[in-house]
Every structure is written in structure tokens, then in C-alpha cells.
Image (cartoon, rainbow, N blue to C red; front, top):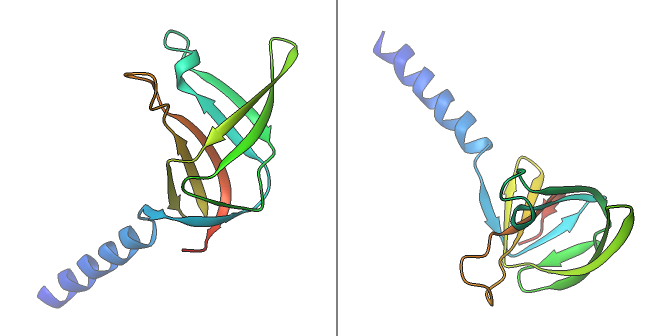
Length: 116
């Protein structure tokens, strides 16, 4: 009985570890991403924009141009990567505007592979 409980506990630990988040310094991005601008929608849940073109590789500290459609027009902006989190082959690139006190983070979600 104790052996079965130990085996189950070990399997649960391994499955939780396999899907755990890990931070990354550099990743290879696999296709377009989805931008979530939380600062735009404090009352409506935020702005969400699909199909953001991304560079092939990205590292913390990189700044790259982004474009998306909003209100019938194209918005051009830049995105500075302040952190990268990888979970099951999906990356979250986060950008925090350090010049605005209390600014909400912006995030881009994309498929990726961790490089380091």
C-alpha cells in the first residue's frame, strides 16, 4: 500500500514538473504571436491582437517593432522584452513600461523553443 502511494506521489510530481513554468534568457520563436495590452482595457478586459509578426529569436532586453490592427487602422509600436517565461512550448514575452508608475504589463504569447 505504501509503495503504491509513493509511486502515485512520484508520478504526480513528474507530471507537475513537466508542465512547470521556467524562465528563459533567449528563445526561438515559432510563428506569429498574440499581443495582450492590459493597459488599454482596464474596464473592458484589455486589448487583444492576433498575428503579431515576431523575430526568429529574442532575448531579454531586446526591443523589436510590432504592428497590429486597431479601430480600422494599423498601429506601429515597439515591444521591449523584460522577461520570458516558457511553459510547454509556449512563451510569454512580457514588457513593463518602467517610465509609467503602476503601468500594466503587456504580453505576447507565442510558440517557442528555449535556447538558454
